[in-house]
Each structure stands twice: as structure tokens, then as C-alpha cells.
Length: 515
Image 1: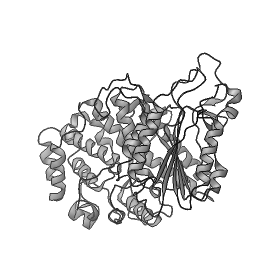
Image 2: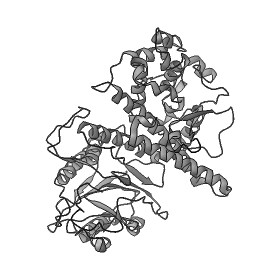
Image 3: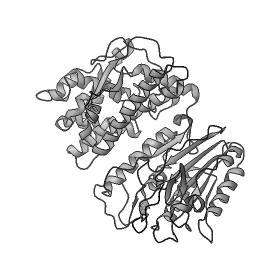
Image 4: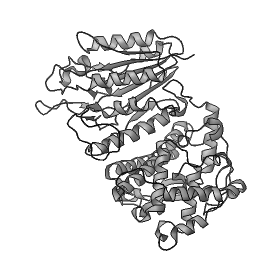
């Protein structure tokens, strides 16, 4: 039986007055400890020392933790505090550090431990890195040359076990926290005012109890959604921090918590085949020559013909939270585009895939909740989502929601919302099950408290961001498999990835304006 163990390390009180204290860190660690123990971890230690969180203390604790594990153990190391990126490496700032660039590599804690990881008997190791904080005051000194935020760390290729690094934010971002003086504004979360906490750590500890988080992919989506909700709720400025996960294994085969069942390789391959055939359309970005970023907003549809699967199947989106057995049933490809009728004889008869008829709306992942909310807007308040007609069916990853999308498209989309709009959509449903789901979405209350253009734009952007990110993941996986292909193939793929990444950045920075 796999034993789950955790080591939690947090730096909060700094000797250097230029480094802001983080008084909420001890509370974050205590909350995380309680959550992990309740989830089933056999041991959770919060590291502490009379001399504070120093490099020698942290390196010694992490080394012992990794080396003293038993064969097959699942280990979790959480590092919380200030962090910097310096000369290609990531560092945790210890409490006795003095912030000048000449000694960063000597006085800070390098997040590395490759040799210790290689020699650890553990079966898998996860790092939660809640660092790169706001609040390091550099205005009173010369900017340290070579210092910047977290870089794109790579997992050592020589490691023989599963290793994942989960960063609280992406490069060029900071990991935000809520102060006790911050006031809630939207009511999107259940957190009460007057508390101080890290937005990332709070999101993780609140979600640890969710047994539905079966793997790292679902964990990533759920944590990101919670971070964005807290960001809105407390009126934080700018774009919400985006967590980043670095690992060499498929996120769907990596489970962090006890009781979570990661998918086997065979199940992942079967789901990849199913998702590739089901997609019917692939997402691409049209960029007009000389138009800069403006062309990124146009998604074109290219119909997949009735051909065998590609020898290099692209990785699909994370599957819905249902059993691997139910999610793995493959579909047959269609030689015709989806135009409101189903693609195969079975889906034409039922309106959706046979595997999803049993439950048409119980999809708990953040992606499916957002897709559902967008469909409700398209049905109940179509005037708020005029961009909906520019979306592709493949952007709705749950088969029942794809069926609803086809019904809306069959009557001309939201631009045909005048008159008997809802009646025409219901009449376009292929069967009673889809009709029932349509009625459910037509009357179900929205999740938000204030339903307006801002809320609608948020749903539009989130669905598009996930679609673009899936496509980037697919292309990057394809690029990693290229070996003997001509250079022009690699160049073309790299250019497409770059264009999508630029569009993704535009979506995150400008929101609905980028659509």
C-alpha cells in the first residue's frame, strides 16, 4: 500500500528589512497539515528550527525526507516564502538572507536536489512551490543584476520516478496573498474577510478534501479556478496568477493525494483515440500577414475526414471526472462536419455518445462547469455572448454539451435570438434526452451573483483559454515526438505554438477584447 507523506517548509520572518515579512505563512501551513491528514496522509511535518528557516536547515530536512522514504512512498514537499530566479536556477529566500545579487546563489536555497531525488526510494515526489512573492522592496537598493522571477524549470531526465513541480504562478508573475484588511467584493468564495492567507496555498488546502480530484490535470484546473475566484472576490488588480506544473509524465497518470486513481497508460491511449475522433474540428489560429496580434482572435474550423487516427495522436484535454471505464469508449469518425445532427448512426439516434447517455449534466470539473455556464448564457441571455457563434464544437469537451452546441448552431446561433429562438433550439434536438438537457440549461440559475457583460466575458474567455491551452499541449507533445522529420516541419510546428502562446497571453491580459 502506498504511503503518503508530506514535509511543509515556510519562511515568514526575514532579517533583511528590504524583504517584507509573510505573517500568514505559518497559518497556511497549519491549514495545509490539517487538510492533508484528513485526506489520508500518514505523516505530515511542519519543519521548524530555533534558528529559523536557513539554507542548512532546509537542505538537511529535504535531504532526510527524500532519502528516508520507503520504497513506493508518495512524497509531497511544500515550500512557501519569497523566491527568486537567478542565473538559470530557482531559489527560496531563507529567513536569514540579505537580498543582494552577489550572494544569492550562496545565501538562498536552490530548489534542485536532483542527486537526492535520484537516490530516493520513493515512487513519486511532488513539490508545491508557493513563492515568488510580492513585497520584496528593491527600491532602496540598486536592482540586483540577473535577478528575475521563476524560470522554466525542467525535470531531470535521468530520474526514474514520477516527479512534478507545481508553481504558484507563471514566469513574470507573483504569487499573491490576501491581507486581513482586504475586503471581499463579489462573494465568489466562502472565505470571510479579516483573514490573511496565500491565494495559492488556500486554494490547495480547500481542495484537498475533494475526492473527485483524480489526477494532476484535474488538480491543476480546480486550483486555477479557485485562485481566479479568490482573485475576483478580493478585488486583486491585474490578471490572476496562473499556476504552472512541470513534469515529464502525463498529468492524468499522476495522483498527488491518497484515494485518487490516476489513469493507466492504456486508458489514456484509449481516451486519446476517443477524444481525437470526437473532436470533429481542430482549432487553429489565423494570422493575417502584417496584422500583429489582431489575427489571433480568429479561430478557424477544419473538418477531420473519415480517416484512421494519426500515427502521432495529439494529447486530448483532461477527461471528465467519471470512471475510466465509462470515459474510455471510443467513437467512430465522421466524414461530414457537425451541422446540428450527430456524426454516426449511434450518435444520430441518441444525440450524443452512448457512454454519456446515463448522465447528461453531472460534470464536476472546472472546465465543464464553465462550458455549462456559457451554454446557459447562450440560451438565457444570448445578447451577452455575441462571440459565442465564433466558437467551435471542439471547445465544448463534454459530449452532452457538444450536443447542445450543435442545437444552437443548427438554428443559426445566438445571432438568431429574436422571436421563437428557444422553441427552434428545442425542436432541433435529436431526442428527448438532449431536449431535457436543453430545458434544464434554459431555466437553471447562473452561478454568478451579478450577471452582466463582465460575467459573460469571463465565461467566454475561460472556455477559449482552455481550448487554446489544450491545442498548445497537443502541439508541444507532437513537437517532442519529432525526431527524423525535416527541419521545415519542426519550424512550422514551432511557429504555430508561438502564435497560440501569443494569443493565449493576449486572452489573459485583455480578456474578452482579444476574442
